[in-house]
Length: 152
Image (cartoon, rainbow, N blue to C red):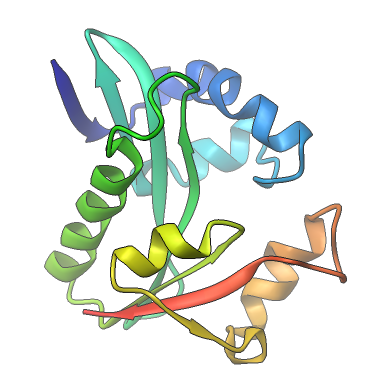
């Protein structure tokens, strides 16, 4: 049985273990345990039979704009709509919060386009996003990620 739930502080160790290969490959930014703890309310986790198989975060930037970030699905569970359901869960949360738009930076453009996101110029991203997150990336300033947005 698969279930989706908000993260707890006790989940951080398993979250960090799951995301480590994607951090090492440069796909996902490294976030310290303290940073994850500070933002724990933004994470939605996916479990199958008690095993953590994926998660993502809905990070709020402004009163109208949030970001889907840190989307990860464990090898062996990809291609089964787990990531899609995680994103959809976050989009429902965004709507319930009254947000108007959700953005993402991704190497998986077709995945997000299937969910209704459309490409936007990176120059339109909030400046604080670049200086808070992008500057920590090993690919900065030469980034191949695509920025997309969905209007709710």
